[in-house]
Image (cartoon, rainbow over all chains, first blue to last red; front, side):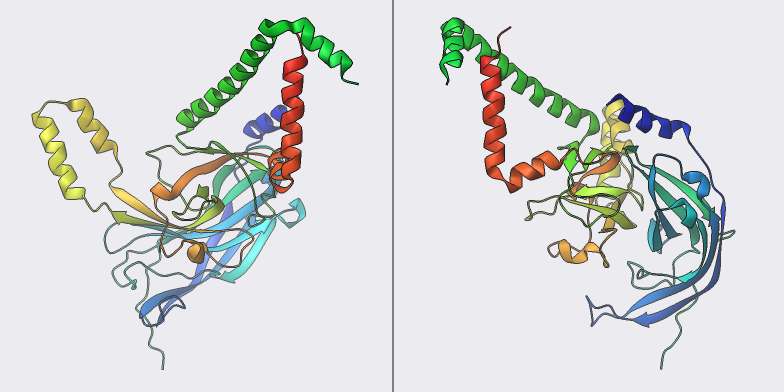
Length: 158
Length: 207
């Protein structure tokens, strides 16, 4: 019991703030419809990004795994904030904690109004959730796009 | 075989047995009090839950213990792991938030009117309580780390989760300990065995 508590408490001391780089290669918006609402036209955003981060300092003796996620943060046409996870990944070993990814969004990226036309430019950030063997879950940010990226007009598909 | 136990009972007498029963009841009552007190502090109906499925592997496995809080004025964020209960399905689900969508509170105008009334009544404290309520409500979409798709099909026809569906947010983690309750559910006889043995001990032990 005491050992478990000691290990859990040690997480509060073993704090690291890794820094990573995140940049958007491209963002495109296409009209389409979802499987759930096949008759409703809505816009989908497709994001290509480059990501590099060294997360090894986050791996200490009480680190079970890291849950990494890339999220878009933007204010929509109604003036309220939206946070959308567009990509995630689980890192389970220290050897895999140096991240170099050229990727695209893994999850559907859409807006409640079904269009990004009036949405304000979005910030993108790389966040992590450190999940311990025992104790508290901690969160942090490991990278952020240097400036907000605006949504382009939807492209027409023939 | 039970001669000694019977002898022990006889030595206790009626009064002794009643005292033991009282001890037993007070143990149960204080356990219940602690549970409810913890619930009050953390603002959730069940501050400790046991993971029942593998949909959050490799983070959480069956039998892991999760500690929840649900502070009323703290907005949810993506990446938070929530425990939520959909009306109509009895089993709470532990999944991670994938999308947080703000929506303007529908009764925002009436709230402003209400706040004004309270000012006229000079009830400043109540006004502050109203003002502290977040202007924006949140719509949530969740997904299990181990599931390929988001949870929309689990929502029983709802499009989004709202705060009222969320039991709490996972803050702490203790592995394996909850497996006892899973074992008791899977093998009901074990439950009666454990309860019976514990009850017998409580009755027999003197002091």
